[in-house]
Amino acid sequence: MQNDPPPLPESCPGGDGQPGRRMGAEAYRQGTISHRVPEELHRLHLLEQVLDPGTIAILDRLGVAPTWRCAELGAGAGSVAGWLADRCPDGRVVATDIDTDFLRRTNGPENLEILQHDAAVDDFTPGSFDLVHARALLSHIRDRDAVLAKMAAWLAPGGWLVVEDAVFLPAEASPYPEFRELLWAIETLFAQVQGSDVRWGRRIPAALAGCGLVDVGLSVTPSVCGNGGIHQEFWRANFTQAAAAIVQTGLLTTVEVDTAVNCLEDPGFSDLACLFVSGWARKPELVP
Ligand SMILES: C[S@@+](CC[C@H](N)C(=O)[O-])C[C@H]1O[C@@H](n2cnc3c(N)ncnc32)[C@H](O)[C@@H]1O
Image 1: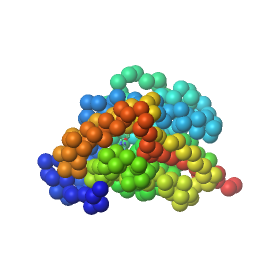
Image 2: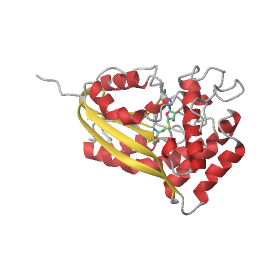
Image 3: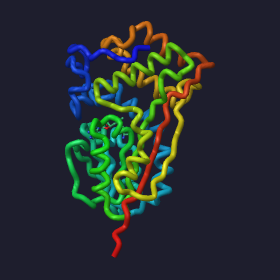
Image 4: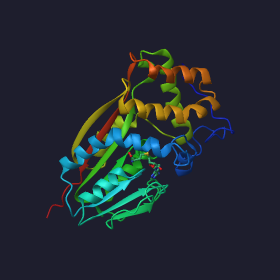
């Protein structure tokens, strides 16, 4: 396994010969999980099937109330925004994304506002939400700690910030040599093209506390490649979408990618590739 991946050539998605130079929304749009990729809506629906049960359990536990004002940032295909809109009929939900095409496919309820908004650049009025939620977003934003601090500022006193992200386990610890290379390649590709840090999620509880929030909580969902089921389908979609770019950037050959993806067909194959970490914390109430 190489430790020092080469910069992306100019012909590659996101490549300008300067790894990590093109950042922000445009970098995300150049990557393999951009809304511009025809298969991305399907991949987002798989992500929702993998993660919605855990997310909804957390939001239920926090007691989302009918009057809450909620922000769902980087809302993707919109399942959590839709759930919140149902749950807050007397409040409002703002569902944001840099690309709102998937959110605008159907007519939503009146209390659901869809807003094109770049969490790294754009703002909201401080103190305007009872809940701010972001899932699988901050790992893909370069200035993620600064964005988290902005999100905390958007909370009203007593409001909850819920942040969820994948934490890739170290690829080199995988027991399957071919698969190890693929995990390393996809992590490297995400970092180089989009500036993603798919290990940042480990820092969520500390980062929430660092924003001055209290009552910090944490839950973790393991994601296993192999063993069939929805996690396997989700991982296959990630690898399939990234395959061409992994080869084009010289990270792996087509044969290496195909061999690794084919591991998923082996009924005996099972590799714990990632943990999904969810953290939540509350803005202190104002002291009279
Ligand atoms: C991996 S998807 C997750 C979607 C959704 N949160 C979910 O978990 O089902 C990340 C989403 O964030 C959006 N996104 C990326 N960068 C963003 C930014 N700077 N501000 C707002 N949205 C962004 C992408 O367009 C995409 O829809």
